[in-house]
Amino acid sequence: MVAGRWVKDQEANIVMLTEGIYKVAWTEPTGTDVALDFVPNEKKLNGTIFFPAWVKQHPEITVTFQNEHIDRMHEAREKYDTYPKLVVPEFAHITYMGDAGQNNEEVISEAPYEGLTDDIRAGRYFDENYHRIKK
Image 1 (cartoon, rainbow, N blue to C red):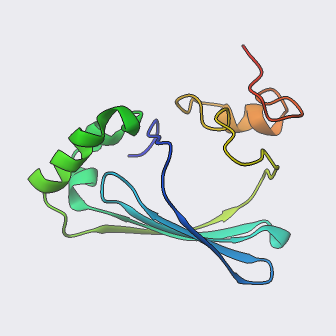
Image 2 (cartoon, one colour):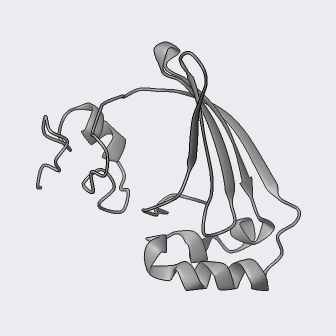
């Protein structure tokens, strides 16, 4: 439902809840709400995604580079049903961490593809300065 979906310049609320535990929360252009708790020292993540009903019913609208279709996302939010929301709670194991710096436009620079995370973990995606290795 979300494979291939990406957005840049997303405003997020990022806070340290206590030493070593961080919360990142945001609302996407689709109206999807996301709240993630990171525990990097234990390589754990817990999160909940709240998808409006229309995203489940019409995922083809959202599976794109959303920045180029913000008006379409807002239009769909008004046109289609919001409720019942699809609530997806998840746990994850963090398999890669790195420091790419702030405002590094190369971190999110292309649509996700099959094997992207494997390429990142194997050092085939970024160089040592977190610049995209050209294919």
